[in-house]
Image (cartoon, rainbow, N blue to C red; front, top):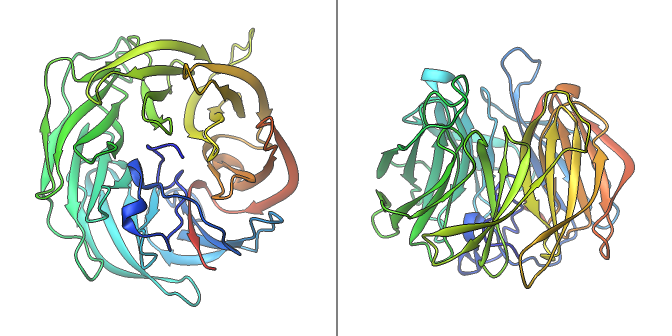
Length: 387
């Protein structure tokens, strides 16, 4: 179990108690007969109506036809609360950006809006829960800040308890790194810190987190992980032990491995390219995930339109490239590994499809199953156990 797993890219077994939650909201897997998958989308300039859902059979990989779960604007990131009762989404709408809370109908999966609050920044692109499930973290990309919202007993969002503006030395790219751009936030193993990947600053920042008050404070000093200038860190995952951190850099199209010194300071030990030799087209790296077994790591390319596979050395944390597999569509902004680890679902944003791949448990290699779903502008998936 990797301890910093995304809640969207993040697969959640919601019948598990909160005490089993790992960093970023991952829990210890348990058998389930089936899952409901929620799909976040972009609605602007598309025919999407908001959040969609479909049933998923982890034994066969069978996916039901999609239907609208809840209408809302630009829900580009969605997470399901560990109790299985609530779903939260960003509304990525520039200066009008918001965070929405929904109640989940246990019978049909439909969503009912509970409340909506301003995200306190522009273009929120990532959500995660603290380890207790009492607070929701949000990363606002364009404004480069992060915030914390308490979750009330009825599932509604409370008024924010923290708001921090990222700061530091900007990267080399004057067009894309003209300011801080928070792209990811999730808590540490012991819930004492929050890690923030900032694309504009070429750092994974570390904030102190008070889990009683829901507050964030800068750590200062050397408490961060530094990427090569111009790399543009986007998302982060951790090894099961917490000893190693893996960062996908959007602009450099690379994965960097860091050794975790003390949960505050990190040392880069390996950087690997995500593109084949000779590729010269446009590419933006996007998602990164560790397989539930902890043996394999996957990352996606937009432009090359592929998933690259790595094997993980459990002792050293180092990666070895295995293969790269076309996603069968354009712009795989996100992909998700089902909670059993049997299948990977790649969301091809510009092709309006979700393509399914079977994962070989011994090698980690991906094989297309031929199963695809038509979904307008799919960019995020979150699972809910319905056993």
